[in-house]
Image (tube, rainbow, N blue to C red; front, side, top):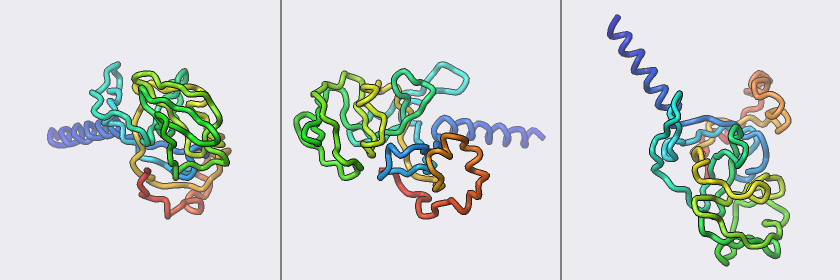
Length: 202
């Protein structure tokens, strides 16, 4: 009996640690299309970004700093209950501007093979990203709410980074926004994108 209790305690402890370190999220919109698709279920690695310890106000130490080009999940400014997925274009101290449909960081034109848009980078004056903050954009620029709308994102708002696509359903955005639970009961195998399973997110 005592041994069974120890095993159960160990299983619960491992489950708790995994829930702190990792998270599974669904992509409900097309703002990152080209990199991830609507209906992709992503495994988010939170461990390196100092995740919160459940039932406390404490966080683990942050072991990783965000770099240009990283795809991250984060809480957008003023919306701490929402989680967005975007690509980091610039970090604290960088200069960002768009001109003639091209995006420039520190005066250098960015070559963005992942970007999906009719004309990348809306014309905008140069901004300097404050220290400790990030400038983020969706890869599908014509259909993304990002730093062009809500400004820079404090690095402390970063939750983690997507590692792989675990599985993916080909249901449209309206289905995911209406009821994610209903999607799972709507012939899920028929909508499963087998080719997306276990693809790395880059």
